[in-house]
Length: 232
Image (cartoon, rainbow, N blue to C red; front, side):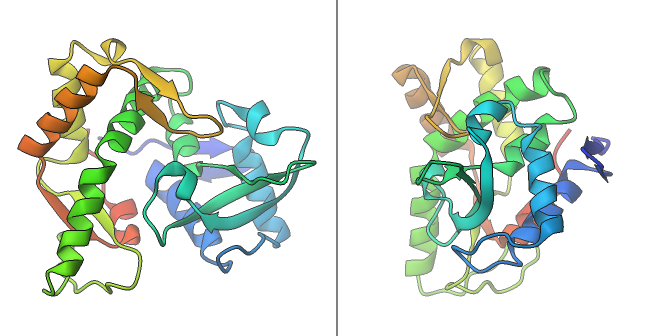
């Protein structure tokens, strides 16, 4: 698939992956639970949040600052961090989910957002399976190897579970085709989150069975995973 340029505010990137990597670069400049203090970094995220499909909900009465914090409310694995929003007059941090925002920019309001809606719900539904896979790999005592580079992974650092073959996008396309298309998979958006959950228990059972039968999982660093080209 040809790279899709991403543009927001005064920022331009040649692809979705390049835009995500810039977000990650800024995030990684700050210690966990640290505020995003750089004026340029703050301006970058303020421009990006303007593109959020739930902009008003994320901004609230105004943004005081951005903060790096664990992504636990998005059901992410322990040790993963994201950028959060501190709203004026609200004590609880609000998740940003910049990856989903970036993915929606090239095709705002179009089929890509519809795919992302279902993608997030399907990904959340198999989170227990991917978490179990990671735990089993760590407990095995064998060296943890990246399926993307072959490098030995640091078991104490952040590790992503990736779909080696078939790729994640292919699994999603195959399952949605069997289900009659994206419009046939009903989801419900989680409160204060970019995520979705599957509404129909039968669809969830069908998906988890499909995933168990067809998915081949592997491990990689978050950086390797983010840089991995997306399927057409």
